[in-house]
Image (cartoon, rainbow, N blue to C red):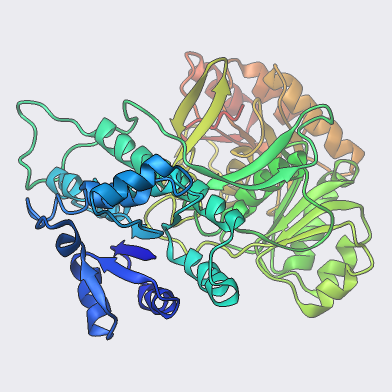
Length: 532
């Protein structure tokens, strides 16, 4: 038997080669891999020696040869294939170990030139992988170092790789080729090249939306059903998930997550991790029904729950701080579907041991950085429509005090300004039309998803009344501008003294005049947060 090993990432390759050699497998290799194996005292034959044809064109051509592909593609159960190999003195290749030129890592580097990108497009590697994967019954093809341990274990135990493992390796190989080709297509489809294009030594300009979009997602699990019981569903993750995103969660206890659990958990987690101080978000049917910031887990949960105890029943709870026993005791008094936090004390977990159906997820907060990925956020959002998709940059806008424009005679107080930023951040995660009343770092009433902004405002006030919360002296965030003064009048009638809205309506002055007439302050954010 023979094995051809040619890898860019050399992690674990020596140990794999040693295991193959111990089973009497002849080792073939190329370039740096061959040099490494020889340095480790392993007998290795260069592919060029086997083919009788030297590497050429700066290594672009070295494995594209009948002795390589004939050895990979020949079916051992077809006499004519074996006769052809014998006629041309070609030996079978029974193991192929290849990982590809690091194209994705290369183009991810700042300042990557088109020339660098092109030179990191592997040709011979994918060709060999496809040949071996097609002939999976006879050839074990390894494309990632994480696969080595399984193969080594099977070789040691049985002297061969099982049919089941070979097929799984083949599927993984074709998936890897698909991912690789998709990355190349995405990048090259975004490169702007013309007569006045940058020189090869310069980084090219990339379109934000490439000419072709290739989704690369890995299935995490099948789900019991979809949004409704007659629908089927599965969860997939990005090929390279952002740290601190929901798909990186570790489930510590509870039933299997459902489709709706996951969708609502994502809404809660995205909202809660946007706060820099301890925060709690309770979500029901995709909308925050209670949000609060404070000093610790117990305080923020207690405040968030007060907003709408009725909707919080059977909700999704997310905290951006460690959950301790005191907070756990309080949360355990209500029915909760999913509970998320970056950490749990032993006492907190003990509280929920008897509530075996509660799904507890631990998710590390992102460490932060300049990019959306480093912040644990999506760079792009996608929505499925009939026979197509809508792609847009994700709504990652962050508002600061310096961005606010006071447009009324009355000025907001410092406490009101802090509450305005809090309310604005919550409104960003509420379905449009969104109206959010807040006070002292706590939502007091949330109106979501209505066709009329007036109705959202009325619903928010009704919910506050049901929770016995006074809206006197609250601030209000509206995710889009008030097209008429009636929206402002409704929130002021219910007790609001300060309003934040994007501005930009033809009737802005009418609304500003109304605010001055009512003796309230109003600021413009200059940005809208529709969420459909």
